[in-house]
Length: 617
Image 1 (spheres, rainbow, N blue to C red):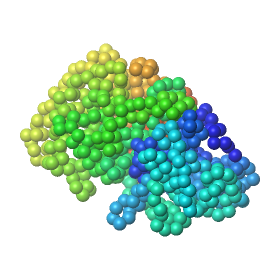
Image 2 (spheres, rainbow, N blue to C red):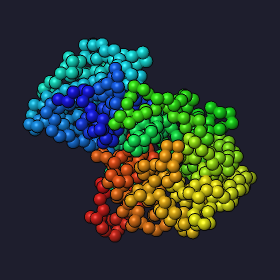
Image 3 (cartoon, helix red, strand yellow):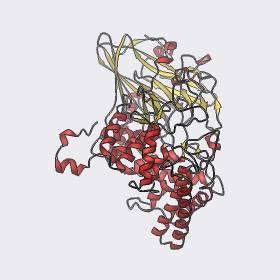
Image 4 (spheres, rainbow, N blue to C red):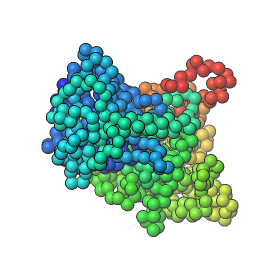
């Protein structure tokens, strides 16, 4: 049996599987330990933080372990088309146990029931397995352990700001004293608010499981998935859903903080917040799959975020509850992933100027005016709110900012930011036309054209035959590949073809793409930014190089972890995952590229060749 303090930082990996319900999220490692869980919401204090190696008073704590004595092997998978995780542990004699982990989510009394509750069901599968259940939550970002009290069938962990109750039919004394016992029959562990259950434990856990499974199967059933790579797309879509905080409509960039972008770097950031840019990409991907409720929730979120400033001036990032401050600081009690700190809480990007955010919001909302499926489409009231953001877009389009890459030490007029401001004005013109407002349509088209002319004059570099990353610059970055995506230039425009060639020359490393090559505040990047590789794949498709795109796409898929998920970055040399996890940006890239590359259902059925296509790949 592994001692609690024996976790070796060098053995940690991102072989993690998220569970959640759009309020609470947790990460389970490949052996069935919950190593990360912010409580009671996606941005909360991590009660389980062993992923970031707590030190001092909490050394060896911060996890919820279920271990089998004389461990030999582990297998892990999701129950088909759900966010329910199944881990099977086997010992050296062949005895085994099955752990089913999930966070309840289903319709109840006409509302979505999504409590901040983790459910773990443990069942013997073969032999007489001997298991250890170890529950050691932390508070204060790994700085202290809550006090423990014992009830008739529960353990209660209390801190100044939290009451956490484990209700179980497992032997409490074995859990309290961390002593192994023979699992002769199934047990259930329900960890949540310090409140009593209103039904028997097994009945409650079983009902939670059955109804949660029904919810996810029904949600997936209505996704418009491509014919190829269906399992990969479905898993990405579920994961994107888990990264949404449904109560407000926010979408977090990832569930974690401070997983380094590369080994030996201080590029450790807190991603448990809602970047308007990232959220737009998530909305776009889910809209492609027909899951439009996330878009509707995000528009409500933006309405509240924009109302915080009378002038509708937007920040690039907000908390999952707009208006809550999250100034950046260091968690001294957490050593970091593999001991590679610092661990940051909060993110100073909140203070930055990033001018592309106005385009991100307008683009996220545009479908509201044209999608006839929506029960409540965009109207003149929503258009008026978007026009306030458009006014900012036209004002700041040609002004310096930190760019989408969030440079902390320099500012410039960045091409992508200016192009997204163009996109805001352009789309507002289209929406105005659809609403029968010709004067407003002309107004926005004239501003869009003014911005477009400035970009073509200052961001095109004739000597390189390429667009460049900033006005008057000499370098390229991966965001230039999106100029075609937003409609600024056509895919067959020689200027885009030249830009694609320049990006390939300067940023491609093997089958992966770096976001830029220049040194920034922390030196030169050391890993490929995963979504940029997907942007490159999409650009190849757009210019007719589909065969190359498919080949690279398959190689990126091969870098996913054991349950099919991606983090923010990939080492081009080893294929190892780095950066915060699961990264919504990366899962968006997977979905969009699969939709672009897949043969259609009609092609598969009409022309045969179905045996050569693996829908479950």
